Length: 191
Image 1 (cartoon, one colour):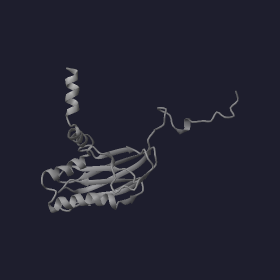
Image 2 (spheres, helix red, strand yellow):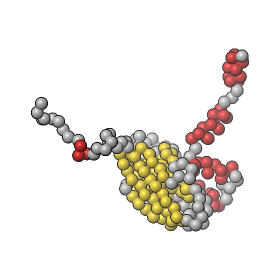
Image 3 (tube, helix red, strand yellow):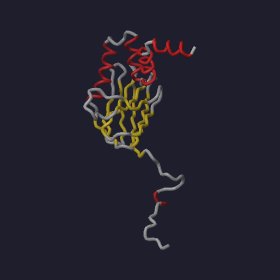
Image 4 (cartoon, one colour):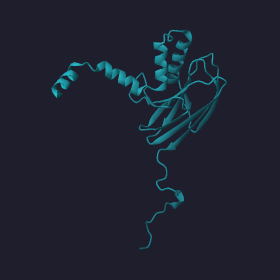
């Protein structure tokens, strides 16, 4: 019986299943939404084409951002927009970004952080994404470099957007209830 199971597993082509698993497991909410536009036949409409192009432009032409940072933007729902910010992080620093949207027509908001371009690749990969319906992203940098923070509302959604971002150390003070005043050198103390 075990031999029959092993034989069945070796004769089945698992590549399509692996591709499906990879798509389901590692897709960001933005990638799922983009794929739904393609699968729904909307990707070739003028509005969806502009939305996808705006997402790419945000990665290619980001505005430089000095953290901490707060920005207000008014997004017209009729014009697809994607905001891109280049953020310099050192290894071990954490970026916390929060987006608040005030609007009459609630919708999804996609917040993604893309890896530094360390190898000259034409396409950057996301290293962190805010979850479905989340408006907060937090990520600890594993590499030093310039990351890109992209914020994009779904099609036909907009409103007043406020982005607040801060850079913090990934590790807090190691002792609960204590602070920097509690650190002292014992060098030179009498025995």
